[in-house]
Length: 459
Image 1 (tube, helix red, strand yellow):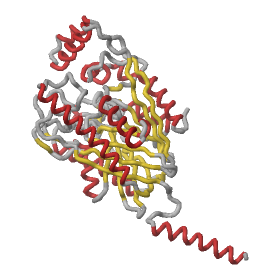
Image 2 (image 1 turned 90 degrees about the vertical axis):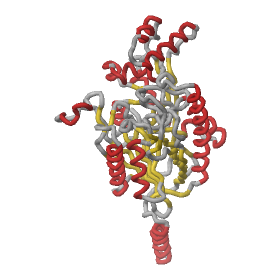
Image 3 (image 1 turned 120 degrees about the vertical axis):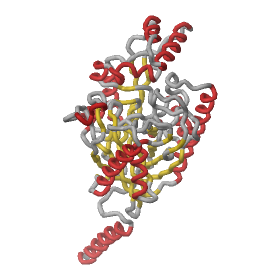
Image 4 (image 1 turned 60 degrees about the horizontal axis):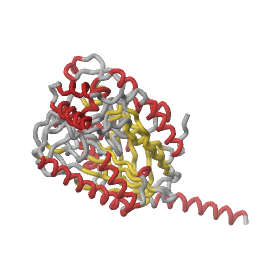
């Protein structure tokens, strides 16, 4: 009997080992995940206005490379699902984001906690409806074109997620942070004299978060990766995903059939410098792709098939509302969009419509196995990524520009120092005021609360 039991044990061990080899999966790796991917071209026709630079004077006139929306659906061993949607867009305005997420709830029973809509923040993508309305001096025909494009985009994103859900298959998930260093803190380093600076000043956070998805044969199916840096290398009139677009193209060229998805980090005060040429955008794209390739080639952490998601919207207070005198002073500005902003706000004041006192700000946390992914709305400065990693550990992934891009999100330091990110940028986004001094404490406290709901260890 003992001999028979021994033979049975050996047989079971052999079946386990050779079964793992047959599936392309080494023994001991996490099992139970399913994943589906899908992609769709979202490049507008030339002639639509481009988002991101107020200095542009006319619509687009061509395409450098296509813009994409891509979806990665994840499902854990219990059937819990989440979807990451990445796009070559400046960012999703609230109204569009809410409509998309409401449709995804109705069609696929996905809650807001289970959906991340991330924009790469390329400044070579299209203007969307209900976003940055004071910046661009377009005519009524452009308003109609932008509305039509936005409606089409909404349909495309919903269909994209549906296609990714249909394509689910057994996979393993792996995660690790890489590094590359072309981001430059634009508040503390002058681009004009960059070549003469003996050293660059921070703060910075150079992490390249990578999620690797392998199919049951052990082949690469998808890779999601991020970086915290403004895609503002290009400022011309051709559609492109900027350096992030080139990075995805590099990875997909190196791995035919693989879907590469880029998500933007907390890079609101970070630029790729120097800039303003296609070769530079290509260079930064290759550098980022090389950082991802290195991570893919090295051992990565295996993620157990356990998914938790949590989401909330916390009220961020504005500082005091502008008075008529304040707005008339802005009217004296030489900057055209600031004048348009002041005119619109004055008209609202005269109609007796009160300015909002706060804004409902989206905070989201996923846990993929033991991998935290923290997702925030708006243009978040790098100090948030640094502080969140101090709280949740250096392996945490931080994404910004997610679900709603309503304005810049300064830290306490940046808010106190002022400048574009802390002071005048609220006019770009049409906000009634700068943020209250409580903004950083409010956001960090809310992240901790939401992280607890997602099961993360918290202070």
